[in-house]
Image (cartoon, rainbow, N blue to C red; front, side, top):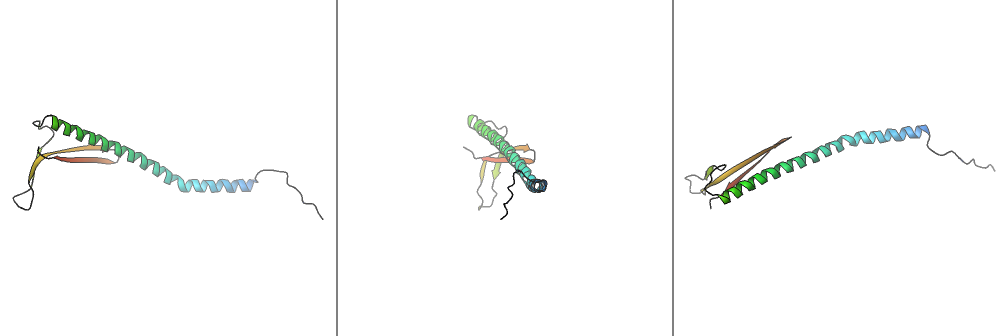
Amino acid sequence: MRAQKIRTDMGFTLPEVIVAITLLLLIAVAFGPMISHAFTEIFLAGEKTKTIHEAETRVHELRQKEDDDPDDKSGFPEVRFGTDDPRNIESTGKQASIKSTWSRGMTSITIYLPPE
C-alpha cells in the first residue's frame, strides 16, 4: 500500500485567487450603483424633510403672529370661499402660502385660517 502524500503548502493557487477576485468585482459592480443611488435618495429625503420642517415653522410663526395681533393683515390675504349657489358653504378667512426650495424641487404649504 502506498502512503498518501501530505500537502504541507498552505494557501490558494493563483487561479483560485483570480477567480475569487473576479467574483468579488462582479458583485461590487452589480450592487455598487444600487447602493450609491440608495445613499443619494436618503440624503435627498433628509433635505426635503428639513425643508418641510422650515416651512412648517414659518407657518407656525404666522399663526402665532395672527393670534398675537388679529388686526395685522400682513402676509394673509382675505379669502372668500363659496358662491351664490346654496349648496356651497361660504366662509371668509385668511390664507398663507409658504414655499421653500430644495435641490430637487419646491415644497409648498398653504394654510387656511378661519375667522375667530
